[in-house]
Length: 325
Image 1 (cartoon, rainbow, N blue to C red):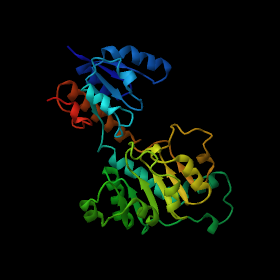
Image 2 (cartoon, rainbow, N blue to C red):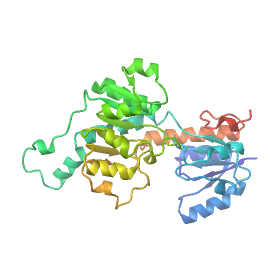
Image 3 (spheres, rainbow, N blue to C red):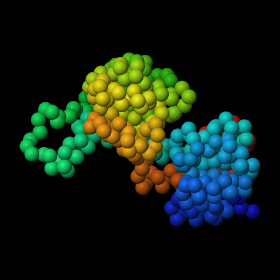
Image 4 (cartoon, rainbow, N blue to C red):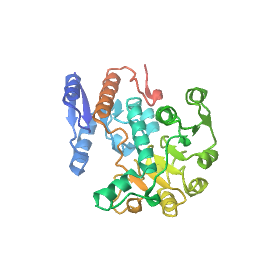
């Protein structure tokens, strides 16, 4: 007898066919009021869940007594109460690795766009305001040879370091839980304390997960340590940054500019002061948003879910304490 899977993310036809082959599938088309009501109705019979961008808290999952596995189409797992899932022996899996290179591409796109003022000056051209050769008031700054500071040296941090070191000749400094000799050897990188990195880097790039320890890690004190020419890049999670302090640092020109793909609240509200600043490049959380990468993430999530429902340990298990082999 097939197990029941509730899917709250649309998948490609081949992946849908594969799921239907192995499970009874209930598809939630949209996470609006009607969709959430349908989800609640389906949870009592669900053995597996697959989706993204939905906060699955204990109150919601208490409605699913048969639940065995949750497959998240994401690398971040801050939408899940991992302790709760582990206590209930519910296997949580994610999709690391497949989005590493694409997200690092996004990070470097933001580095280049902010340094060379690409969006600001393209908007000037589009508005018909380019009447003569630009002068110093519109100059950007070089990227090559500048110091790249990375906070969080995981897979994405390493991919960003690779681009900076080999592609742009950038000295790489980083801060993480501990020094990583293999990173030092590959990229000529050097470990720094957080404060030292903030003071020394030309580009400060966040690539770390959101946890209780990292929430609002970067605030007014940290921005004050940066220099007036520092460019700040965030491709991790919005809540790692105190957004009000960031706005103040940009308005006061405590730092030069920011490239942001993530925000405290998403979608970013139309009235956000970030949207009124010409030294901000803001993108709508596009880190992994390519056709190839999103399909690879979905395929990975399907693999994880079917393995878990088949009694196997998923390749990308987040909470190994929940697995009883």
